[in-house]
Amino acid sequence: MANLTSKELSALEDQIGLEETLIKKYEAMAYLCNDTKIQQDLNNFANKHRTHYNSLVSFLQ
Image (cartoon, rainbow, N blue to C red; front, side):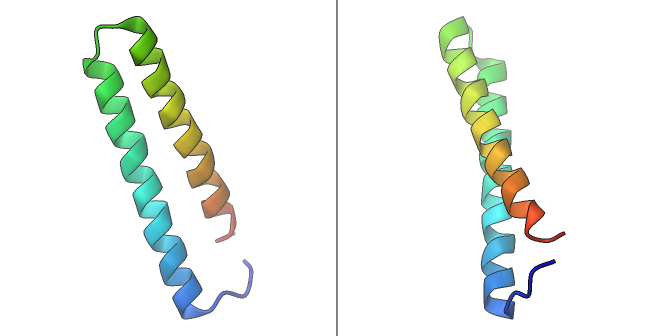
């Protein structure tokens, strides 16, 4: 794990939580959507935020 200050660690934890929320919201919207193009776009957005999430989590390892 990188040497992070408590402020940096707190900000990182906050951002990880926000990315996780976005993933869940986009996946939920995609599930409820009937239009396949919009559903695909929403899943792409969820995957983009999943990549962000994984990148942020890597700073904790």
